[in-house]
Image (cartoon, rainbow, N blue to C red; front, side, top):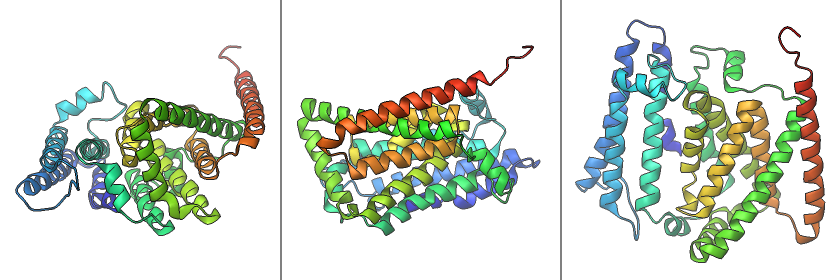
Length: 343
């Protein structure tokens, strides 16, 4: 994920171009260069440059072609009429260099991730790599945070307070914190149920996902490792996806992008479960704030890392029902305090 930082100078340039007379020229140049570079990587690799590897059992030609198609689609976004049509579906400004470049990067991220999932046996490849460490998690997640802060123009177009407001990082109300905890419990229960169905309907893929997950995260089963895998993704991913991207790309597109980065699940029920949880986090962000969705994400990661022993299931259900009731009361009371216009 450190590769995410490669477009950082262009993200900064896009922010610097906002409001300038040459903004439209900057948009075309930035979008064209990035899309062209993506296409070139696929083309060179197709010619034998060895820039990307499909790995054992992968389809190298398909992977290269997927990258080239991704670059070509991203290049189309350099045209303002295309962005204007997209703006009818997504809350973007077609004249904003930042919004245009965000679209380009979103297409490239999704296209390359999708190509990887389709043409690379990601589950087999992940099992050949060493288990990740806390340092690896930090290296994977920090670029998300950096790109989010740069994307909203921290110290370029916005000061720290303005950037925090744009990202939805506000102090949550008490009921929002309860809602986050209740949602995390619901997400955990849903994932457990989906995992059971996955083992029932697709036992081969489910077992392979389990082995890969245990292998990849096996070195993080101590308290410090569990805390790292809960906090770092919960903070960094939420600030980028729900904080920076969702207000511009919309809830569903952002959820799909979020799902696409979880390549360790391949094409499986687990990936579909991640998409549904991503939609849930997006709804929390939409109706509350990023702080609340981040708390839900962190809490879910903690539950997944710690697990719930059989003897504690009843207690967990009781606690979850209590949290849901308390969150429901909080939502009802907060809405009750809103006085209708003219009332």
